[in-house]
Image (cartoon, rainbow over all chains, first blue to last red; front, side):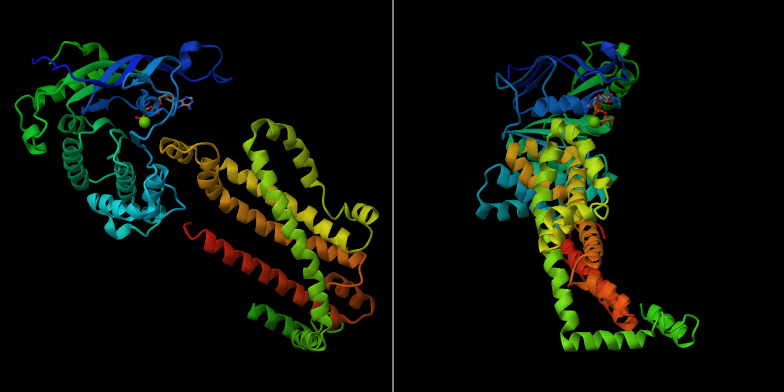
Length: 273
Length: 238
Ligand SMILES: Nc1ncnc2c1ncn2[C@@H]1O[C@H](COP(=O)(O)OP(=O)(O)OP(=O)(O)O)[C@@H](O)[C@H]1O
Ligand SMILES: [Mg+2]
């Protein structure tokens, strides 16, 4: 296949390991709590990288490390050549369980993120309106999270992350609770935003079709311990429509391959594609 | 409520319970009216409130910050936890003589008793509130760049409010209960005193009038607190 043009590396998982302290019950078995083992992964400037992996393999843990919300127990997390030790304004996270503040309205949830990012009050209103329009929730601005459906909450969470116009967007199964239609709309929207704003995106999903239609590369993870089994370079054009991607001659083969690697990590050929 | 009043009226009028021991509801209500008209009950209600309100406010001012401090500091918490457990299970009523002994029978000892009884629910409500803060909200706040004090003020405290409010309502009820008991034993004013004194004078309508007023005060206090609560917690699922 085509060789990668030399692109600056934005995020680098450098020989990264993460283990949680042993619980009393788990005893002294050191491997019992090793969640991520020797993760080596480069994410390029402006890249859309999708991570797929079985439940519990450590995807969320990986994202926390990239966000600077937790520190690795081995190796290091690098952003633009510097070791990540804490969250930063250039990174924004969409959490798996929305993480909306139930005591704030939709509007205030988003304005809160803007205020935290130091956006002056007078421009907040405009920006909240804009991202709400983007996810089709202008009418829900004054509602509280408990008055929203799961899909709506997820869209608010996405809007909140986009509102701060991050350079690096870390998304943990952000479309999981959406119906097929909304999901596809937002996939298209996200790809459009990514191309336009030149964001670097790490997107976690367990849906292979979603991985194929969104990303430029797909990192496939295995579990126990969590590791990157293979990284698949996708042949689709960045500006290809989702429909074009799904009818691409290589789509079916790629889909089969990723499926195989997910269920049998040994099937990974590393050099494949 | 109306039904309860009717049942009361009927069982007393028909003599199911001797009207001497339970005067009809209408008689008691008339008594309440006279009590207020003459200013006699007003004076005692004010005396009780004059003890309950400062006691509760002091408990609030001490309990919330103390609870926040205990709930946040893990080490302090494990250290203090047994102490709190023992003290809160020591009934304020049992300590009544102690309070009287140390602070006399004046206002100070009454206020101190309300304070003591109200402190624990507020303290525990605050600590529970902190324990119930979803770590995910903290994570979200941190990912937005918040840390330390800002995280605490903007996320931890609002997230703990529901439980703090529950504590406040329990505290008001507990404070009132203890206050009445204290007034019965050693006081020359307040609803507790009126209840006790009327009973000794065999002025049963007067006694029931005071009890009725006490119930209404308790009910109104709770209703007022619920009102404040719904204002601050309008985001809660109803
Ligand atoms: N705070 C923690 N303490 C101890 N173990 C943890 C902690 N957080 C996660 N783990 C463990 O780490 C492993 C990976 O968890 P993680 O949430 O990263 O998985 P995941 O790939 O995101 O799963 P899913 O697809 O279900 O979201 C799990 O076995 C989990 O039990
Ligand atoms: Mg996860």
